[in-house]
Length: 110
Length: 119
Image (cartoon, rainbow over all chains, first blue to last red; front, side, top):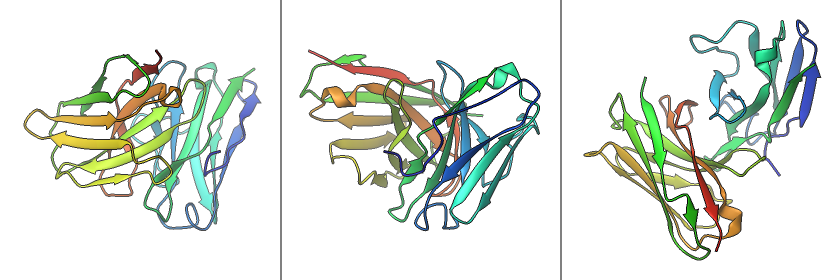
């Protein structure tokens, strides 16, 4: 069981907007460590998508956005495209100084 | 941007010791933190631990203390050793680079190496 809770799956039609939640606690997301998001396309390694709650690395489309409030965070994907079909993971740190991940959310583009 | 490449035996017998290497190219291993992360087939990511280029390590307290990480600055390589492996250790193992500080994000990942524990 993962420290951070994510919905196992979400889906949306092309062009729609979807959000993926990441729920933690006061010992991880509720701290100031920040939340990061990774996209894992089928058969590939994870790739950084959002860092420090809401920042996009160079090259990541602005269709992807992140936010954090209290002990939760969320990833929003607008203008859904077929190429967005992937697994998405949130990550933060906890009071044991360990990196913790969410269980992952599979995004299906209908 | 640095590139990371994991390598390992692929298949290991139960109770044996697994050794993996991560070769870093396109940049120096020095002054950064590095991590090993594993992913069983069809499951999520599990952080194994972090190591600084100086050799300082931190391990996931939720895992048994069977992991050992090291760094070789002369060859720009990281190593992971896992003793007394069981089937539960079957996974893809990734090495990843921290962007900066102790609590930062992973900005570069290797392609991963599949380790299967089976007799």
